[in-house]
Amino acid sequence: MIGLIALAILSFWGFVSYKLSDFLVKKIKSNAVKYGVQTTLCVLLFLVPVADDIAGGFQFRALCNTEAVLMVDEEKARGKNLTSIGAKDSELIGYILPITKFYFSYKDLATGETVVSWNYFIARGGWLSRTLNILGSDAPYTFNGNCAPENGGSKIFKKLNIKVIYN
Image (tube, rainbow, N blue to C red; front, side, top):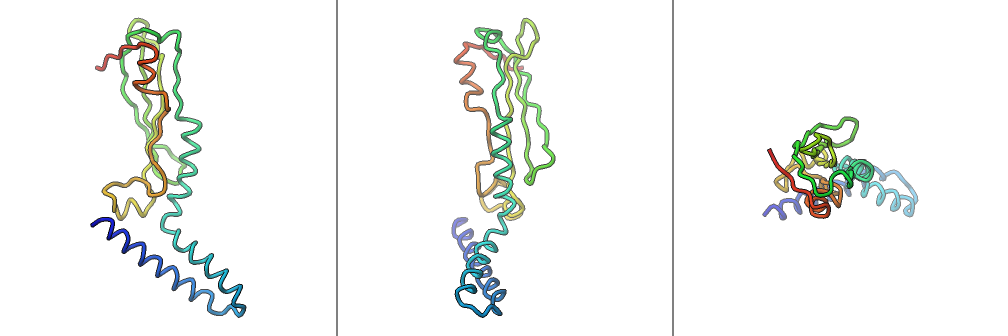
């Protein structure tokens, strides 16, 4: 049912985009120019509701590529017993979309030194997904709003024979 509603909304917005672009190019005399401008306008108008989602996706992917990295001192972590400090979350400022950063860290029980840590990011969608909530969440429509290091979590613990104690 949700799919039909989403399809109806997309169809309606496509129709509105077409009619609005048709209205805006009414005074252009040349048919070739008129058709080109109308097509371009129609596509741009159709994308307006998710423009923040699209632009935010570029920012989010850039953030993930630089900040969602695993930080581990393999020599100090190998075969150790570590304790989870838990995830510290913070809202990031200066991005088009709301983004939450979760910082996970694990300390050596013997020394108290942080030997494994990583960042995990979750992006919420643009104004359309937050307003309509069609899919039952406010996740972005145009990209995956989650990112973490590929080799983080249980993979690194297995690889380095680490035992984690959760408090």
